[in-house]
Length: 357
Image (cartoon, rainbow, N blue to C red):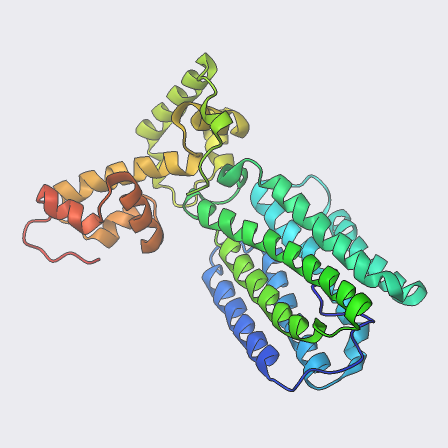
């Protein structure tokens, strides 16, 4: 993984800096935070495992380059090969349910680590190349899953879909960065006998581990990029109108948007319409993703409550289906171009009572 291991790089140890162990500690704190945050819901176990693996990789990096413990070179490349499959498995849990048995999925994603372990015995010189292929391959697979944008996260709550989408893109970029570093280090040893490799290894290892850890934490919590011009120019169809009319009626009659855990898959089941059909209709006819569509309903009701009741902003936020103030404030500003407090003051709501922000 990402320059943590290479048989070519063992010729010297970096100057002792305890930074890898500090990073490991911070990642461990992040893991505990995510675990506590998700204790009332079903956690995304692959993402949790990815954070723990980042902790282990950071410790191995510190032992290898800080203390010159060469024995970790046996462990590092194998554990490195487990990083991309865990990232992909975590993303998959937000995108779709798998019909394969758990044992079959574990066996499939264990193949890269098994291959690296085999190469350590029979052909150590190609381990770097194999790791590059693993990282690039899984990064491309993740980006392929994310082609529809935030709407690809069918099993993620709408409130967290956009931040999760961005975090996943960052994670895929980190995997590509890791592969790029490995390629650069390989070429550096070939051309300059590793003159620049040590500095790059020291900085890039920790940077990629931090990016992956934070991305996994953000994605597990589960404004998409603007649609392409090609998609925007597609004409609305009769089926699109019927689909949106059905979903609109469901939203207004049952107020599904109030469900903080509502996601595209659940919305599709309630409407009796395929998830892809709902996503395509809203994207094509309304030029927005489903997350924004649902949040428009939430903000619409929030505006009415802020103007006509004495409920605090926080109470309104929870009532309409938001769970965090940051998402609520961001979406409120997207729809109204002002903050919830500014809206209430403009509409003269809440009388003389103090309002929490």
